[in-house]
Length: 298
Length: 223
Ligand SMILES: Nc1ncnc2c1ncn2[C@@H]1O[C@H](COP(=O)(O)OP(=O)(O)OP(=O)(O)O)[C@@H](O)[C@H]1O
Ligand SMILES: [Mg+2]
Image 1 (tube, rainbow over the protein chains, first blue to last red):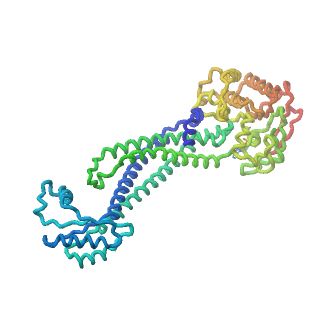
Image 2 (cartoon, rainbow over the protein chains, first blue to last red):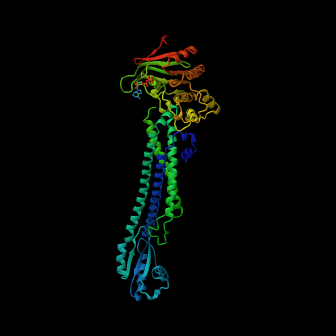
Image 3 (cartoon, rainbow over the protein chains, first blue to last red):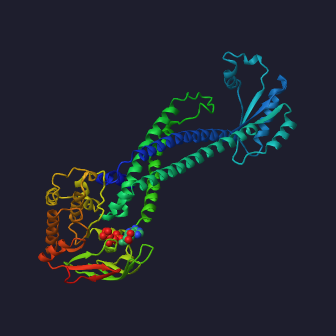
């Protein structure tokens, strides 16, 4: 930060010793803008898949359901058997029968309100919450079969695990893209800086002859490229954020595509992209300039 | 201030300068002559650290050039005002900005009064806002001289400073250099202009060095 403010307060006189070079300037601004734009989407992707991964992983760790389908006269007995069995199963923190009103609420989105639930042969549901160590699913299934033949263990693990893994991997790919974008930005700014340096060799020679230190010359170039990268990246970031904000809002079901975006404080995160781009530009230009100067006569 | 000891130099081909020894004492006034292509510019470049000798030692302000970092060289240049033969400027900046450039890169600011006076003195008073490419050869040389002395350097090195000047302007420039020498500056001028040398000899005690057959000699009374 100190570095950046020093850069900004550096006198304008020093800035002017390097002639403005329209083409490399535009190139740097455009590259930074485009890269920041892409970075915002990569960031949104990795955050959305991160949320998804967390949610699914949380669900995995959380609960499972036992469905009891039995003739009406046996169902209460089986439910009691299941509950007492669960109470003695290691790795299960708690269990409870889901009361019919709650079940109605769960089904409402599918069948609409006013469902005559009593008239339907609905299975009884028992929800269990896993303890820290987890439980032995196969063992539980066997004991259930022995003591409550109408009970079926439905642990969501089976179908959710691959999704959680996929989401986790998607988050990683998003972060990897961010790193690649940073690297590509650095490479392109290095190219632009090298072009500007070679175009300005006579200027560098004059500056050296009147007693300029390398650091002075380097600063003049670095300042320019850093400010251009900063402004380009700011523009790209804002445009991309507008793009993300204009995506259709996610409803609570939270489909993946409509969930692509930022939430709450997450909206502040893209604002780190312009400073990071500036830091990348700073480092790339500085390296390029120092290398060029070292190769010149004194 | 500046000393050469057994200095030799070649650009990769044959040796251009051999066994050159030279000592510029503080306050001295030297001319350097020799045929075109004999290595005058090369010798001056060795004297302000742009080139490193192929053998021997060049010492600037008691420091050997070979041991200097790039920053050391930069600091030395602030104590040596140089008028180059090809007078390069920053073509996108006006003359005044170019003239004060040595101060700018050293982080100092110019006294506006001094600058105006200096420009007037070298006859460029009305050209302060002109861009260098629009100047004539002589104007460029005078601007280069102004740039060389604005830092109030201890040593002034000039390569053909009167090459594009008429006689009247050459004399004016010589008078300035003589004045600077009287103020204690060490002066080294490469020139073909024997009239200029004679004129200088009448005003101040000078030594004339000549490059002949790759070696540096003291020219005698034949001038
Ligand atoms: N960078 C270089 N690379 C190779 N050879 C060079 C280089 N600079 C100069 N020379 C050669 O070195 C020789 C001396 O050049 P230099 O410029 O020192 O001569 P000079 O005495 O200043 O001549 P003039 O009076 O014409 O200015 C010339 O033959 C020139 O061609
Ligand atoms: Mg020459």
